[in-house]
Image 1 (cartoon, rainbow, N blue to C red):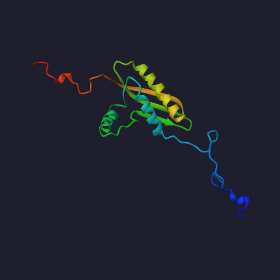
Image 2 (image 1 turned 180 degrees about the horizontal axis):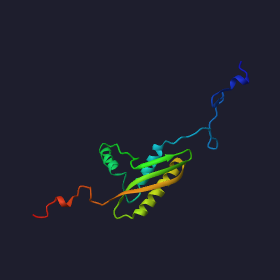
Image 3 (image 1 turned 90 degrees about the vertical axis):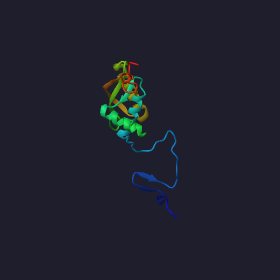
Length: 155
């Protein structure tokens, strides 16, 4: 018959006992959580794309590759987003294209607020900085296939 000391064994970081006990909402287990940079970048990219006045994220080359990825259903939600993630804090840098005639400063402020709020809400990290680089202004009809100059004006 096992003694009381033999019923409880300790291995590594976990105390193992024969009795099982479930964790309730008020109890917590020890451990750490690491959130990958890609996770935070994806959250930031999704939040930025939802802001009215944002046409796209990323610079010209990134958008060209993004169009190819979109065509094969492999959209990169982190395009135009760079993040730094620490244990408790995150910072983000975004490159955006703004729709004309939206007010650039207002769109940038709304993107900053949306990204900071989404990162804080989804990951629990403190957002220390969100930098916005407005790379271009998109003019409606500029690249949507409605090229009026290609049509003849003379019948």
